[in-house]
Length: 276
Length: 246
Image (cartoon, rainbow over all chains, first blue to last red; front, top):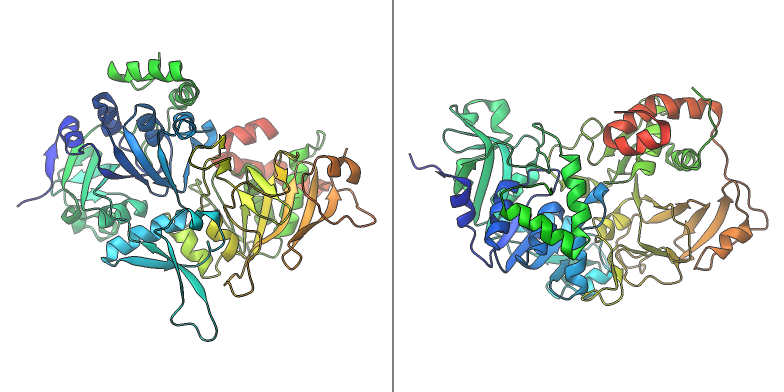
């Protein structure tokens, strides 16, 4: 049968061309740090990131290495580790286009793409300065209003060219187990192509077990898979291993200083994820 | 255990918990340890009547449909209270999570609006929380409106800000007036010291009480089971405040 291609990490990363509109998972939900590392080493260029719906370490690292032209996100932050230093520096220098959104807009835009429809209406948000800065968002009168005018926001479908994430396991047919992390399912449904790194590939069929099937992305949506043990280090992977707090704190520190980040990136080029 | 001096954060946790009593479902966003602790305290004394969803928690999070579920839930009216903060908060209840200066070349950049532009409309009781209470954070007019404090009458808006809790004081918010009223000041503060640190105008009643201190039962609950529950999601915070590990 023809399932997803099984590649090594380098070949999976090579399927992400410069300039790709690339959807990435939030820090808590399966970051393919193994592929991000390869993109950093390659100095990918012109990526247009879609954060689902917020971004952290992956985005900040890519921005710092000059890989990113624009990012659509509800927020970019290193969470409890503090501000995203490279993101902030790039914005202050005018080197990055930030398309500020709000979490439910990104979810709704991806849901529109998932349904193959051009837009999604959403409550709230009207009167936020976000609307003024997003000409692609429209306000219409609710055509189903009972009485009077009822303005409501429309947001366009968000169709990433590629969704990239890391998951605990794939089965022999390329079905990908994601547990309760259904934003990964949404990403795979919405994107034209989905590339996944996994901790392990197991010789079973996740779809044969009903309890597991509901927490599985069918291979139908998956173009290629690569195995990468601890592929979400240092951010950590749900249900598998926690964050490497020392490495994340080191990165957060490095992100706030040009020279320190340059040194951090040299370590990445040398094959390490933690700064010396 | 109730020994040990009452800490300011314990006062904040208790006063926010008081605002949540009676809620059926309280949700707490990421990186919000004081509101998170307050929600878990209110839940602990609700006799099982209150649900609390803490984003980022495994044990105190029952969503199973991904990141969107919180927002869908809110739009249906299934969330009674939520917490928002801001790099700036102004006297009309507007919050700014984007930055200061031209957003394309900001002087200061904040993380971004998260779900604020939406949840501020949908959740009936939005409690604004910002520990730093200075003219820098509480401003006359925010540089960028992530979420407006009020909306025109024709806009669908079942929810909005109802209170502001800071490291110095508690304010109530009136959407009709689009204005705050000082409700209480924390120990060590007076209405005058609070006014000197607030960049926006607000109503001050003739008498402003001191914010109540948590009683012994509340302290015991907070420092016992609540502290242990908090440590699961906010280990650094719980260790710093109560000296306990997850």
